[in-house]
Image (cartoon, rainbow, N blue to C red; front, side, top):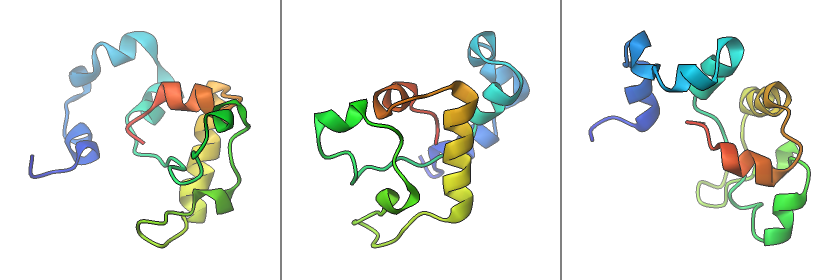
Length: 98
């Protein structure tokens, strides 16, 4: 696959989301089609699945030695708020192209 998954999603026609659009409409559907962020390094214990979404500093990526941008963190907060997610277990179950 020469392109990343999110680039492939961007190239799909509107009717390419026929099943996703049966479950999500409007802003929720648009969020389902966007790339997001996940705090992989922060999630080092099963107990963290019961915790609230982490703050921006906890999105540090050890593999790339970098923090997420303010824009990416705002996007993550928008996803949490729009879908009413309360803990990391709920977030992990959603797993958007994020």
